[in-house]
Length: 350
Image (cartoon, rainbow, N blue to C red; front, side, top):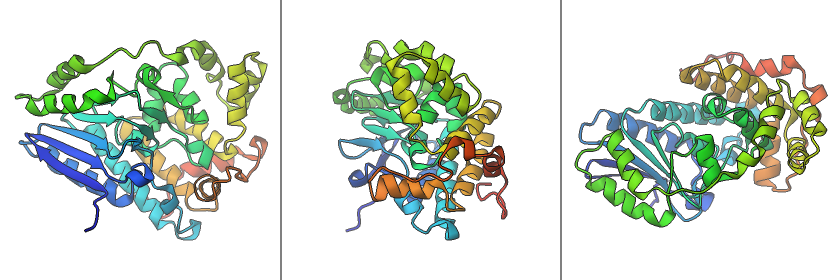
């Protein structure tokens, strides 16, 4: 019997979505995105469904992202697989963003990239001691997508740009601090929490808040707050070159470590991200998604760092990508802006 990669259930007026690819950390495929989008459209208009709960199978991950290996399999000369994936994923992200009913994501494990997109746009995001958050796309020559242009630019201070450029990994209190999570509870409480939601007679956003409050805990202080002033000043710079220079001038281990991480990232990705997030600050959500589709389409349409990054990090796993251009000073503004053009055959996302 074929195993479904995404499982849908209905219990007492609650729609359940289970991402069911634990062998690949519940990575999203095109078909999974299409199915979730279609089911949410049905549940949105179905009066008997009062709320949605989404989780991941296995004990390691909620969702570690999109299935990048499959996305790049056809190569840049025939990138329809990539285009179809990004279009399906971004439509699903938009569906979640506009979903009017309580949408409760249980981030009980690794939550990165596409896993952030399938959770952060909902109304309630439960973080546990197992949650590990990151947007690590620059390390594979991509860019933080799934609505990052919108949500990263609305994080406190310069945290969004810092996380988008460095792919820094956060846990517990830090995830709440930046606004990805809306509540924290121990993983062992999730079953009882779900039962409480199922048994609630009247489900609304306020009622879900009250149920969560019965199970929520204080994860203590956020470690990232210790470096907040350093982050805000260094990543308030408007160019990646200025960020590098600023970090070089700071006599602190955090600055040295951060600069070392940035120097490993794709130079093209770093400059595209700067432009992307600068524009995202001024855009509404749907316009951010359209912009991201254009960037993703561009990066998958030529022999870009995206293909090299996936090869080096996810396929060969030697973690030594050969970026082109290999340095920031060879990435021109004209190269960057080309990623924001309307595709020659139009926007598949529309």
